[in-house]
Each structure stands twice: as structure tokens, then as C-alpha cells.
Amino acid sequence: ATLPTPALAGRKKPGNRLQDLTHVFTEGFPVYTFDNPTRRTLVTVEEDGFYSQEWTFGEHSGTHMDAPGHFIADGRRSPEITLQELFAPAVVIDISRRVASDPDAVVTVDDIRRFEHGRGRIPKGAAVFMYSGWESRVHDQDLYRNTGPDGRYHFPGFGIDALEWLLEHRDIKCIGVDTLSLDYGASTTFDVHLTLLGADKYGLENLANLKRIPARGALVFVGLIPWEEGSGGPCRVAAAW
Image (cartoon, rainbow, N blue to C red; front, side, top):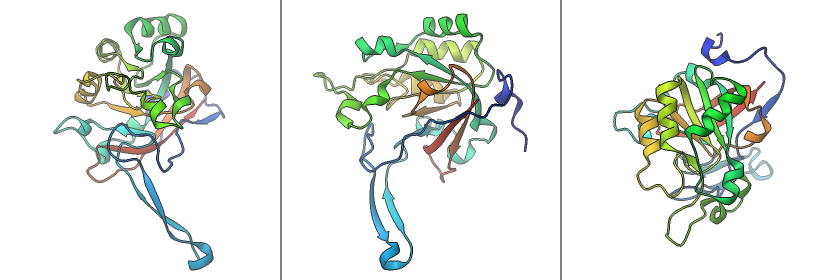
């Protein structure tokens, strides 16, 4: 099958560079809530002739998708996400300088306008990613969550104004972040989740290596398993340019 035309928008020609945007799914991977992933060995090559593990984890563990049904009662679930939606031209908006001094920083409309001023209009059907550099903390759940004296998490995310601007003025497929949540960590209203998923778009959380792909020009593939009745789920995300 051929790739959907919107997914190729903004690409001058196919390239041969590839980058995994997925964290290794590990036991104990930091999670926003519920239990961390666990695993146990079922059989070994030495004792049983083959090797296999059993995993226990919530759907929103590791690098994963939030499908519309994650927050919207009648929203689409994992098997309803189409193949066309899993391919998209990527743009990466870098807010890492602000994050270095303000962990509550968010992507703003001004960030988007500056991006477009330097790199051109966000292409149709784009995946709009936030790079904050927060992935450097992923090895430690306490650092990754960054809980403050107020009892809330403090890490960056998308601002609601920026998301609403994208939904009104650009035809995007999804947004993605290199943190635990599409909303910034201290949010209690989850406006970004509710607005994005309410618009029948999906989000990607815990992305990796966004600094290693071009700010514009890569094509991303989101390898979501069609989990039965899934509210999203772990996936393999890769970029090519």
C-alpha cells in the first residue's frame, strides 16, 4: 500500500536516516500513576528449550499513545486508529532552554510562530513534538516526576493556548512530548488532554531522541498495537528522513 499523501507533505525526497524515538520498555519504567511495569521469567532456554517472559503493566507505560478514548467516553480506542494516522511528517519545537530554568514551561503560540518563521509552515497532517530535554531524567522516577513541595509534579508540556491554535489554524494529526504527560506536570484540569482527545486526535508521551531528528523534514511512524478496547498503549515510534 502507498503512504497517505498528507504523511509525505514537507518531505523533499526519501532519505536513509532512521532514528528510534522509543525508550526501551523496562521493568520499573516511570509512570504518571498506577504501578510501574513488572516482569518475570516464565521459561528459559537452558531449562525449557526456549525463553519467554510475562509482563504486567498499565496501557500508559513507556513510550505510548493516548487515544481519544483515554479521556473521552465515546472516543475512539486503539483498534480504531487508522493506518493513515500512524504516518505523519514531524516537526520538533525545542523549548529546552526555558525548561532548564523553569520545569513548568509549556509550548506557547509564540514558540510555534517562531518555529514557522524560521522553518516554514507546519505541514498538513503533522505530528507536532515538544523537545524539552526532560528525557535525561527518565532513569529515575523521582527526577522524572519532579514532585514539588506542593505535592504536584513539575515538568514541561503543551500549553492549552498553543494546542487550541494548532487545532484552529493547522491540520495536525497528533502532538507528542518527551515527558510523562501532554499537559505540564502541575496541571490539575488536564485541559490539553481533554481538548486534543476531544478533537479526535491522539497524543504521544515519553518520546525519546527528539534532538536527534531534524526540526522539520522527518516522517514518523507510530507502531501502535491494536489493543482490544485500548485507551492507547505502548508503541514503537520511529523517524525517517
